[in-house]
Image 1 (cartoon, rainbow, N blue to C red):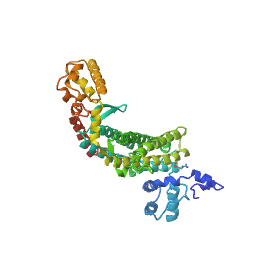
Image 2: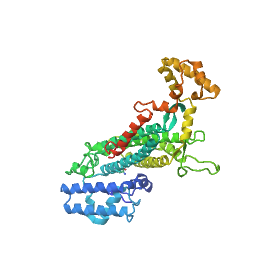
Image 3: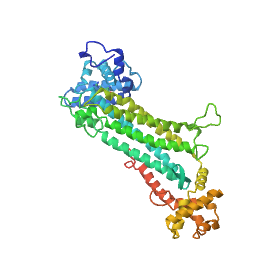
Image 4: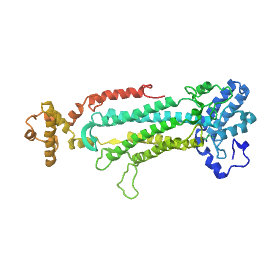
Length: 465
Ligand code: ARG
Protein backbone atom coordinates (compact mmCIF):
# COMPACT_ATOMS: atom_id res chain seq x y z
CA UNK A 1 0.00 0.00 0.00
CA UNK A 2 1.61 3.22 -1.12
CA UNK A 3 -0.21 6.32 -0.02
CA UNK A 4 0.59 9.96 -0.53
CA UNK A 5 -1.00 11.16 2.67
CA UNK A 6 0.36 8.92 5.49
CA UNK A 7 1.79 11.76 7.63
CA UNK A 8 -1.31 12.55 9.62
CA UNK A 9 -2.23 8.94 10.27
CA UNK A 10 -1.16 6.70 13.12
CA UNK A 11 -2.27 3.38 11.77
CA UNK A 12 -2.48 1.60 8.43
CA UNK A 13 -5.71 1.62 6.49
CA UNK A 14 -7.71 -1.55 6.77
CA UNK A 15 -7.21 -3.72 3.68
CA UNK A 16 -10.89 -3.67 2.79
CA UNK A 17 -11.04 0.09 3.22
CA UNK A 18 -7.95 0.49 1.10
CA UNK A 19 -9.42 -1.50 -1.73
CA UNK A 20 -12.80 0.19 -1.45
CA UNK A 21 -11.14 3.58 -1.73
CA UNK A 22 -8.52 2.83 -4.39
CA UNK A 23 -9.09 3.76 -8.01
CA UNK A 24 -5.91 2.51 -9.71
CA UNK A 25 -7.72 -0.46 -11.25
CA UNK A 26 -9.60 1.94 -13.52
CA UNK A 27 -7.93 5.35 -13.44
CA UNK A 28 -4.77 3.82 -14.92
CA UNK A 29 -6.66 4.26 -18.16
CA UNK A 30 -5.55 7.89 -18.24
CA UNK A 31 -1.87 7.44 -17.30
CA UNK A 32 -0.86 9.35 -20.44
CA UNK A 33 -3.08 12.32 -19.66
CA UNK A 34 -1.88 12.29 -16.04
CA UNK A 35 1.75 12.50 -17.15
CA UNK A 36 1.05 15.12 -19.82
CA UNK A 37 -0.82 17.23 -17.28
CA UNK A 38 2.09 16.95 -14.86
CA UNK A 39 4.52 17.99 -17.57
CA UNK A 40 2.54 21.13 -18.31
CA UNK A 41 2.35 21.88 -14.59
CA UNK A 42 6.11 21.50 -14.18
CA UNK A 43 6.89 23.67 -17.20
CA UNK A 44 4.71 26.37 -15.69
CA UNK A 45 6.31 26.02 -12.22
CA UNK A 46 9.76 26.48 -13.79
CA UNK A 47 8.63 29.41 -15.92
CA UNK A 48 7.26 31.11 -12.82
CA UNK A 49 10.46 30.52 -10.86
CA UNK A 50 8.65 28.26 -8.38
CA UNK A 51 11.07 25.52 -9.44
CA UNK A 52 14.54 26.17 -10.85
CA UNK A 53 15.07 25.48 -14.54
CA UNK A 54 17.22 22.52 -13.66
CA UNK A 55 14.65 21.02 -11.31
CA UNK A 56 12.05 21.44 -14.01
CA UNK A 57 14.25 19.64 -16.54
CA UNK A 58 14.93 16.75 -14.18
CA UNK A 59 11.26 16.26 -13.41
CA UNK A 60 10.32 16.50 -17.06
CA UNK A 61 12.80 13.89 -18.15
CA UNK A 62 11.73 11.64 -15.26
CA UNK A 63 8.10 11.94 -16.35
CA UNK A 64 9.07 11.33 -19.96
CA UNK A 65 10.90 8.14 -19.03
CA UNK A 66 7.90 6.90 -17.01
CA UNK A 67 5.60 7.54 -19.96
CA UNK A 68 8.01 5.74 -22.27
CA UNK A 69 8.33 2.71 -20.01
CA UNK A 70 4.61 2.40 -19.35
CA UNK A 71 3.94 2.53 -23.09
CA UNK A 72 6.50 -0.12 -23.99
CA UNK A 73 5.36 -2.38 -21.16
CA UNK A 74 8.56 -2.30 -19.07
CA UNK A 75 6.80 -0.39 -16.27
CA UNK A 76 3.56 -2.19 -15.46
CA UNK A 77 0.94 -0.24 -13.53
CA UNK A 78 0.34 -2.31 -10.41
CA UNK A 79 -2.37 -2.16 -7.80
CA UNK A 80 -0.04 -1.44 -4.89
CA UNK A 81 -0.71 2.25 -5.50
CA UNK A 82 -3.92 3.96 -4.54
CA UNK A 83 -4.42 5.71 -7.84
CA UNK A 84 -2.63 6.65 -11.04
CA UNK A 85 -1.46 9.95 -9.54
CA UNK A 86 0.32 8.16 -6.67
CA UNK A 87 1.79 5.65 -9.10
CA UNK A 88 3.37 8.35 -11.25
CA UNK A 89 4.64 10.41 -8.32
CA UNK A 90 6.13 7.42 -6.49
CA UNK A 91 7.88 6.24 -9.62
CA UNK A 92 9.16 9.73 -10.31
CA UNK A 93 10.68 9.98 -6.83
CA UNK A 94 12.08 6.46 -7.26
CA UNK A 95 13.80 7.55 -10.46
CA UNK A 96 15.04 11.07 -9.79
CA UNK A 97 15.09 11.26 -6.01
CA UNK A 98 13.99 14.13 -3.77
CA UNK A 99 13.48 16.66 -6.54
CA UNK A 100 10.55 14.50 -7.67
CA UNK A 101 8.80 15.45 -4.42
CA UNK A 102 8.43 18.99 -5.80
CA UNK A 103 6.12 17.95 -8.63
CA UNK A 104 2.98 18.36 -6.58
CA UNK A 105 3.77 21.97 -5.58
CA UNK A 106 0.68 24.13 -6.02
CA UNK A 107 -1.50 21.23 -7.04
CA UNK A 108 -4.04 18.87 -5.51
CA UNK A 109 -5.30 15.54 -6.73
CA UNK A 110 -8.65 17.27 -6.99
CA UNK A 111 -7.60 19.56 -9.83
CA UNK A 112 -5.30 16.84 -11.17
CA UNK A 113 -8.04 14.24 -11.57
CA UNK A 114 -10.42 16.86 -12.96
CA UNK A 115 -7.80 17.66 -15.58
CA UNK A 116 -6.97 14.03 -16.43
CA UNK A 117 -10.61 13.12 -16.95
CA UNK A 118 -11.21 16.16 -19.11
CA UNK A 119 -8.18 15.43 -21.29
CA UNK A 120 -9.16 11.78 -21.63
CA UNK A 121 -12.76 12.62 -22.47
CA UNK A 122 -11.78 15.28 -24.99
CA UNK A 123 -9.88 12.67 -27.03
CA UNK A 124 -12.77 10.25 -26.76
CA UNK A 125 -15.32 12.82 -27.92
CA UNK A 126 -13.18 13.31 -31.01
CA UNK A 127 -12.85 9.57 -31.55
CA UNK A 128 -16.60 9.08 -31.21
CA UNK A 129 -17.07 11.77 -33.83
CA UNK A 130 -14.58 10.10 -36.16
CA UNK A 131 -16.43 6.78 -35.89
CA UNK A 132 -19.74 8.49 -36.61
CA UNK A 133 -18.20 10.03 -39.70
CA UNK A 134 -17.28 6.54 -40.95
CA UNK A 135 -20.86 5.45 -40.41
CA UNK A 136 -22.10 8.47 -42.38
CA UNK A 137 -19.81 7.57 -45.28
CA UNK A 138 -21.42 4.13 -45.50
CA UNK A 139 -24.89 5.66 -45.30
CA UNK A 140 -24.02 8.10 -48.07
CA UNK A 141 -22.77 5.27 -50.30
CA UNK A 142 -26.02 3.36 -49.82
CA UNK A 143 -28.01 6.51 -50.56
CA UNK A 144 -26.08 7.20 -53.75
CA UNK A 145 -26.78 3.69 -54.98
CA UNK A 146 -30.47 3.65 -54.10
CA UNK A 147 -32.27 6.81 -55.16
CA UNK A 148 -34.47 4.63 -57.39
CA UNK A 149 -34.90 1.68 -55.05
CA UNK A 150 -38.57 1.76 -54.13
CA UNK A 151 -39.72 0.49 -50.77
CA UNK A 152 -42.72 1.05 -48.55
CA UNK A 153 -42.51 3.81 -45.98
CA UNK A 154 -44.27 2.93 -42.73
CA UNK A 155 -46.28 4.61 -40.03
CA UNK A 156 -47.48 2.46 -37.11
CA UNK A 157 -45.40 -0.26 -38.82
CA UNK A 158 -48.18 -0.32 -41.44
CA UNK A 159 -47.34 0.36 -45.06
CA UNK A 160 -48.07 4.02 -45.70
CA UNK A 161 -46.58 5.56 -48.85
CA UNK A 162 -43.81 4.53 -51.22
CA UNK A 163 -40.37 5.98 -50.56
CA UNK A 164 -36.88 4.98 -51.62
CA UNK A 165 -34.12 3.24 -49.74
CA UNK A 166 -32.02 6.39 -50.19
CA UNK A 167 -34.73 8.39 -48.45
CA UNK A 168 -34.98 5.94 -45.57
CA UNK A 169 -31.20 5.93 -45.08
CA UNK A 170 -31.21 9.73 -45.30
CA UNK A 171 -33.31 9.90 -42.13
CA UNK A 172 -30.51 8.12 -40.26
CA UNK A 173 -27.93 10.35 -41.92
CA UNK A 174 -29.71 13.32 -40.35
CA UNK A 175 -29.78 11.69 -36.91
CA UNK A 176 -26.09 10.87 -36.85
CA UNK A 177 -25.26 14.28 -38.29
CA UNK A 178 -27.06 15.85 -35.32
CA UNK A 179 -25.16 13.54 -32.98
CA UNK A 180 -21.91 14.87 -34.38
CA UNK A 181 -22.98 18.43 -33.94
CA UNK A 182 -23.89 17.68 -30.32
CA UNK A 183 -20.39 16.29 -29.79
CA UNK A 184 -18.94 19.40 -31.32
CA UNK A 185 -20.90 21.59 -28.88
CA UNK A 186 -19.75 19.49 -25.93
CA UNK A 187 -16.14 19.65 -27.11
CA UNK A 188 -16.32 23.43 -27.30
CA UNK A 189 -17.96 23.88 -23.89
CA UNK A 190 -15.73 21.43 -22.00
CA UNK A 191 -12.49 22.84 -23.34
CA UNK A 192 -11.50 24.84 -20.28
CA UNK A 193 -8.75 23.89 -17.88
CA UNK A 194 -9.23 23.03 -14.18
CA UNK A 195 -5.49 22.81 -13.44
CA UNK A 196 -4.40 25.35 -10.84
CA UNK A 197 -7.67 25.21 -8.92
CA UNK A 198 -5.82 23.32 -6.18
CA UNK A 199 -7.94 21.42 -3.69
CA UNK A 200 -10.76 23.97 -4.04
CA UNK A 201 -9.45 27.46 -3.29
CA UNK A 202 -6.57 28.02 -5.71
CA UNK A 203 -3.07 28.33 -4.27
CA UNK A 204 -0.73 30.92 -2.81
CA UNK A 205 1.94 30.18 -5.43
CA UNK A 206 2.03 32.54 -8.40
CA UNK A 207 0.75 29.96 -10.89
CA UNK A 208 0.20 30.99 -14.50
CA UNK A 209 -3.05 29.19 -15.26
CA UNK A 210 -3.34 30.70 -18.71
CA UNK A 211 -0.02 29.16 -19.62
CA UNK A 212 -0.89 25.59 -18.52
CA UNK A 213 -4.27 25.89 -20.20
CA UNK A 214 -2.57 26.88 -23.42
CA UNK A 215 0.07 24.13 -23.19
CA UNK A 216 -2.71 21.56 -22.88
CA UNK A 217 -4.77 22.89 -25.77
CA UNK A 218 -7.55 24.48 -23.71
CA UNK A 219 -9.25 27.75 -24.52
CA UNK A 220 -8.40 29.08 -21.07
CA UNK A 221 -8.52 28.30 -17.34
CA UNK A 222 -11.81 27.60 -15.55
CA UNK A 223 -12.85 30.73 -13.75
CA UNK A 224 -13.98 29.41 -10.41
CA UNK A 225 -11.70 27.04 -8.56
CA UNK A 226 -14.54 25.35 -6.65
CA UNK A 227 -16.42 24.68 -9.86
CA UNK A 228 -13.20 23.55 -11.55
CA UNK A 229 -12.68 20.65 -9.13
CA UNK A 230 -16.31 19.62 -8.88
CA UNK A 231 -17.80 20.15 -12.33
CA UNK A 232 -18.87 16.93 -14.04
CA UNK A 233 -21.43 18.55 -16.36
CA UNK A 234 -19.37 17.74 -19.44
CA UNK A 235 -19.51 14.03 -18.56
CA UNK A 236 -23.25 14.18 -18.14
CA UNK A 237 -23.55 15.96 -21.48
CA UNK A 238 -21.32 13.41 -23.15
CA UNK A 239 -23.28 10.52 -21.61
CA UNK A 240 -26.46 12.16 -22.82
CA UNK A 241 -25.05 12.52 -26.35
CA UNK A 242 -23.92 8.89 -26.26
CA UNK A 243 -27.37 7.83 -25.05
CA UNK A 244 -28.87 9.59 -28.06
CA UNK A 245 -26.37 7.95 -30.41
CA UNK A 246 -27.29 4.57 -28.91
CA UNK A 247 -31.00 5.35 -29.21
CA UNK A 248 -30.48 6.04 -32.91
CA UNK A 249 -28.43 2.88 -33.37
CA UNK A 250 -31.05 0.92 -31.48
CA UNK A 251 -33.90 2.13 -33.70
CA UNK A 252 -31.84 1.31 -36.76
CA UNK A 253 -31.01 -2.13 -35.31
CA UNK A 254 -34.67 -2.78 -34.68
CA UNK A 255 -35.44 -2.02 -38.31
CA UNK A 256 -32.68 -4.29 -39.55
CA UNK A 257 -33.96 -7.06 -37.29
CA UNK A 258 -37.48 -6.64 -38.71
CA UNK A 259 -36.21 -6.36 -42.29
CA UNK A 260 -34.16 -9.50 -41.77
CA UNK A 261 -37.13 -11.64 -40.68
CA UNK A 262 -38.45 -14.42 -42.92
CA UNK A 263 -41.63 -12.40 -43.33
CA UNK A 264 -39.95 -9.25 -44.66
CA UNK A 265 -36.71 -10.41 -46.25
CA UNK A 266 -35.81 -6.84 -47.17
CA UNK A 267 -32.19 -7.41 -46.20
CA UNK A 268 -29.72 -10.15 -45.72
CA UNK A 269 -27.13 -9.72 -43.02
CA UNK A 270 -23.69 -10.83 -44.08
CA UNK A 271 -22.55 -14.17 -42.66
CA UNK A 272 -19.68 -12.37 -40.96
CA UNK A 273 -22.17 -10.35 -38.92
CA UNK A 274 -24.67 -13.08 -38.02
CA UNK A 275 -24.62 -16.09 -35.77
CA UNK A 276 -26.21 -19.54 -35.84
CA UNK A 277 -28.20 -21.62 -33.40
CA UNK A 278 -26.79 -24.55 -31.46
CA UNK A 279 -29.90 -26.61 -32.13
CA UNK A 280 -31.73 -25.23 -35.19
CA UNK A 281 -29.52 -25.72 -38.24
CA UNK A 282 -31.50 -23.34 -40.45
CA UNK A 283 -31.04 -20.31 -38.20
CA UNK A 284 -29.06 -17.20 -39.01
CA UNK A 285 -29.63 -14.69 -36.27
CA UNK A 286 -29.14 -10.90 -36.22
CA UNK A 287 -27.23 -11.02 -32.92
CA UNK A 288 -25.11 -7.95 -33.58
CA UNK A 289 -28.13 -5.75 -34.17
CA UNK A 290 -29.78 -7.23 -31.08
CA UNK A 291 -26.71 -6.61 -28.95
CA UNK A 292 -26.49 -3.00 -30.09
CA UNK A 293 -30.17 -2.60 -29.18
CA UNK A 294 -29.51 -4.28 -25.84
CA UNK A 295 -26.45 -2.28 -24.92
CA UNK A 296 -28.40 0.94 -25.31
CA UNK A 297 -29.87 0.35 -21.85
CA UNK A 298 -26.41 0.14 -20.41
CA UNK A 299 -25.43 3.59 -21.69
CA UNK A 300 -28.73 5.12 -20.48
CA UNK A 301 -27.94 3.51 -17.12
CA UNK A 302 -24.59 5.29 -16.93
CA UNK A 303 -26.28 8.63 -17.61
CA UNK A 304 -28.91 8.06 -14.89
CA UNK A 305 -26.25 6.83 -12.54
CA UNK A 306 -24.03 9.88 -12.84
CA UNK A 307 -26.95 12.29 -12.66
CA UNK A 308 -28.00 10.58 -9.46
CA UNK A 309 -24.47 10.57 -8.05
CA UNK A 310 -24.10 14.30 -8.65
CA UNK A 311 -27.46 15.45 -7.35
CA UNK A 312 -26.60 15.48 -3.66
CA UNK A 313 -22.99 16.57 -3.70
CA UNK A 314 -22.20 19.81 -1.88
CA UNK A 315 -19.32 21.96 -3.11
CA UNK A 316 -16.57 21.25 -3.75
CA UNK A 317 -14.80 17.92 -4.35
CA UNK A 318 -16.28 14.85 -2.68
CA UNK A 319 -15.15 11.30 -3.15
CA UNK A 320 -18.48 10.32 -4.69
CA UNK A 321 -17.08 11.85 -7.85
CA UNK A 322 -14.65 9.01 -8.26
CA UNK A 323 -17.70 7.03 -9.37
CA UNK A 324 -17.77 9.00 -12.62
CA UNK A 325 -14.94 7.02 -14.14
CA UNK A 326 -16.01 3.42 -14.52
CA UNK A 327 -19.43 4.50 -15.73
CA UNK A 328 -18.10 6.89 -18.32
CA UNK A 329 -15.32 4.56 -19.49
CA UNK A 330 -17.80 1.75 -19.95
CA UNK A 331 -20.27 3.97 -21.80
CA UNK A 332 -17.53 5.26 -24.11
CA UNK A 333 -16.21 1.78 -24.90
CA UNK A 334 -19.74 0.49 -25.42
CA UNK A 335 -20.82 3.35 -27.68
CA UNK A 336 -17.66 3.35 -29.76
CA UNK A 337 -17.78 -0.42 -30.12
CA UNK A 338 -21.42 -0.32 -31.20
CA UNK A 339 -20.89 2.45 -33.76
CA UNK A 340 -17.94 0.59 -35.28
CA UNK A 341 -19.67 -2.79 -35.40
CA UNK A 342 -22.88 -1.34 -36.72
CA UNK A 343 -20.93 0.42 -39.48
CA UNK A 344 -19.39 -2.88 -40.54
CA UNK A 345 -22.74 -4.65 -40.48
CA UNK A 346 -24.40 -1.91 -42.54
CA UNK A 347 -21.56 -1.80 -45.03
CA UNK A 348 -21.93 -5.52 -45.74
CA UNK A 349 -25.73 -5.65 -45.70
CA UNK A 350 -27.45 -6.89 -48.87
CA UNK A 351 -30.67 -5.08 -49.75
CA UNK A 352 -33.30 -7.23 -51.48
CA UNK A 353 -34.57 -4.55 -53.83
CA UNK A 354 -37.06 -6.92 -55.47
CA UNK A 355 -38.66 -7.70 -52.11
CA UNK A 356 -38.80 -4.05 -51.16
CA UNK A 357 -40.51 -2.90 -54.32
CA UNK A 358 -42.94 -5.88 -54.30
CA UNK A 359 -43.87 -5.00 -50.78
CA UNK A 360 -44.47 -1.36 -51.71
CA UNK A 361 -46.74 -2.47 -54.56
CA UNK A 362 -48.83 -4.77 -52.41
CA UNK A 363 -49.82 -2.52 -49.56
CA UNK A 364 -51.95 0.18 -51.25
CA UNK A 365 -49.11 2.61 -50.64
CA UNK A 366 -50.32 4.56 -53.70
CA UNK A 367 -53.81 5.16 -52.30
CA UNK A 368 -52.96 8.77 -51.36
CA UNK A 369 -51.80 9.37 -54.92
CA UNK A 370 -55.04 7.92 -56.31
CA UNK A 371 -56.94 10.42 -54.15
CA UNK A 372 -54.60 13.24 -55.27
CA UNK A 373 -55.37 12.24 -58.88
CA UNK A 374 -59.06 12.88 -58.27
CA UNK A 375 -58.29 16.16 -56.53
CA UNK A 376 -56.25 17.23 -59.56
CA UNK A 377 -59.37 16.52 -61.62
CA UNK A 378 -61.56 18.77 -59.50
CA UNK A 379 -62.91 16.35 -56.86
CA UNK A 380 -62.80 17.78 -53.29
CA UNK A 381 -60.20 15.93 -51.21
CA UNK A 382 -62.66 14.55 -48.65
CA UNK A 383 -64.78 13.00 -51.44
CA UNK A 384 -61.67 11.68 -53.17
CA UNK A 385 -60.57 10.07 -49.88
CA UNK A 386 -63.95 8.28 -49.65
CA UNK A 387 -63.88 7.08 -53.27
CA UNK A 388 -60.40 5.63 -52.97
CA UNK A 389 -61.27 4.11 -49.59
CA UNK A 390 -64.14 2.21 -51.23
CA UNK A 391 -61.83 1.13 -54.07
CA UNK A 392 -59.31 -0.22 -51.53
CA UNK A 393 -62.11 -2.16 -49.81
CA UNK A 394 -63.12 -3.57 -53.18
CA UNK A 395 -59.50 -4.54 -53.93
CA UNK A 396 -59.11 -6.28 -50.56
CA UNK A 397 -62.26 -8.25 -51.33
CA UNK A 398 -61.00 -9.23 -54.80
CA UNK A 399 -57.39 -9.76 -53.69
CA UNK A 400 -56.11 -7.14 -56.14
CA UNK A 401 -53.77 -4.14 -56.07
CA UNK A 402 -55.05 -0.68 -57.06
CA UNK A 403 -53.07 -0.72 -60.30
CA UNK A 404 -54.61 -4.08 -61.26
CA UNK A 405 -58.16 -2.67 -61.42
CA UNK A 406 -59.70 -2.18 -64.85
CA UNK A 407 -60.78 1.27 -65.92
CA UNK A 408 -64.40 0.05 -65.67
CA UNK A 409 -63.86 -0.91 -62.08
CA UNK A 410 -62.43 2.54 -61.40
CA UNK A 411 -65.27 4.26 -63.20
CA UNK A 412 -67.84 2.29 -61.24
CA UNK A 413 -66.72 4.39 -58.24
CA UNK A 414 -66.09 7.66 -60.08
CA UNK A 415 -66.47 8.67 -63.73
CA UNK A 416 -63.57 11.09 -63.27
CA UNK A 417 -61.01 8.29 -63.65
CA UNK A 418 -59.29 8.09 -67.06
CA UNK A 419 -56.50 6.02 -68.66
CA UNK A 420 -53.86 8.23 -67.07
CA UNK A 421 -54.72 6.92 -63.58
CA UNK A 422 -52.30 4.02 -64.10
CA UNK A 423 -49.36 6.30 -64.68
CA UNK A 424 -50.45 8.56 -61.82
CA UNK A 425 -50.32 5.73 -59.29
CA UNK A 426 -47.25 3.85 -60.49
CA UNK A 427 -44.71 3.53 -57.69
CA UNK A 428 -42.19 5.57 -59.68
CA UNK A 429 -44.63 8.44 -60.18
CA UNK A 430 -45.68 8.36 -56.55
CA UNK A 431 -42.08 8.74 -55.43
CA UNK A 432 -40.74 11.04 -58.09
CA UNK A 433 -43.51 13.58 -57.90
CA UNK A 434 -42.61 14.20 -54.29
CA UNK A 435 -40.07 16.89 -54.90
CA UNK A 436 -40.34 19.27 -51.98
CA UNK A 437 -37.17 19.69 -49.94
CA UNK A 438 -36.58 16.53 -47.91
CA UNK A 439 -39.04 14.41 -49.92
CA UNK A 440 -38.08 11.10 -51.59
CA UNK A 441 -38.38 12.18 -55.25
CA UNK A 442 -35.18 11.36 -57.08
CA UNK A 443 -34.37 14.96 -58.05
CA UNK A 444 -34.95 16.20 -54.48
CA UNK A 445 -32.86 13.35 -53.12
CA UNK A 446 -29.94 14.08 -55.47
CA UNK A 447 -29.75 17.61 -54.09
CA UNK A 448 -29.65 16.39 -50.52
CA UNK A 449 -27.01 13.83 -51.45
CA UNK A 450 -24.87 16.56 -52.99
CA UNK A 451 -25.18 18.48 -49.72
CA UNK A 452 -24.18 15.44 -47.70
CA UNK A 453 -21.15 14.91 -49.93
CA UNK A 454 -20.06 18.47 -49.25
CA UNK A 455 -20.75 18.03 -45.54
CA UNK A 456 -18.45 15.00 -45.40
CA UNK A 457 -15.61 16.62 -47.34
CA UNK A 458 -15.77 20.14 -45.91
CA UNK A 459 -13.91 19.75 -42.62
CA UNK A 460 -15.54 22.77 -41.00
CA UNK A 461 -19.07 21.71 -41.75
CA UNK A 462 -18.14 18.06 -41.36
CA UNK A 463 -17.21 18.54 -37.72
CA UNK A 464 -13.65 17.29 -37.58
CA UNK A 465 -12.43 19.25 -34.60
N1 ARG B 1 -9.35 8.93 -7.32
C1 ARG B 1 -9.89 10.21 -7.04
C2 ARG B 1 -11.05 10.49 -8.00
O1 ARG B 1 -11.16 9.78 -8.92
C3 ARG B 1 -8.83 11.24 -7.20
C4 ARG B 1 -9.02 12.47 -6.38
C5 ARG B 1 -8.69 12.18 -4.99
N2 ARG B 1 -8.86 13.30 -4.16
C6 ARG B 1 -9.12 13.18 -2.88
N3 ARG B 1 -9.27 14.25 -2.23
N4 ARG B 1 -9.24 12.02 -2.33
O2 ARG B 1 -11.85 11.36 -7.80
